Image 1 (cartoon, rainbow, N blue to C red):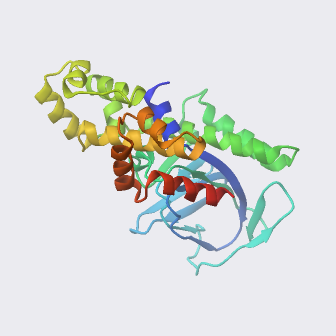
Image 2: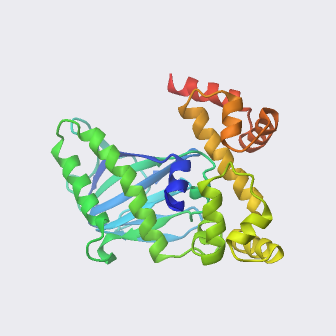
Length: 305
């Protein structure tokens, strides 16, 4: 498993395809800030529209564009015509997806959904507030346009197992969008930027592959072929944090996943993420998530019941 695979796994990303939007005329649709751990996305199948972000930035979306909002930022979706007051579209049930409509045609045709991920995810925290990918500008043979075509086909077909199919495909959609983003816009700082550095990347990947290991600065610096002092300076400058801060984040995300997906005891989980003492693990976990590990597990169980 490479480093990006590990970060995606730690984030526990799951996708869903929720709506088909077919709009005509002049319209505006407001989207509120999402709760933590939800990243909405829009796929433009046909037509064009505008997006306004809270800070006033405006984006133009055309056919083939995919917009993902990693932090769930609120946004205003607008027609390309006259500006109007936001309103609620008509909703039509009956197919695989609920269809939202303004007008009676489909100048704009969208697929809309969301990615759900572990809150405070290191991966999502490292991403900008929006990712805009044009499938029209990708290299020949890139699988992303083909995946969008398959999603559209499943949404149109409404066949048996269609909802399971589109939700499974959206998990792959996130990975392909992330891959395209990293190819188009290499990161200059943060945890993702470390992966692009030949020497620091070796140390960071080693930490991701075995976060429970008792890492020392000397061992990490050796991985990076640097002196201890040079490694610490270079790592902090590029990542914006010390190696121990990032290692703790990885360990806590790993623990969160074990608490949510397994029935392992707290002492076992503490050992799996690199803590010899359950008390020490519980303190760091509470400092990170605002509640003790046992409290979080009960909270997650209540949400799923």
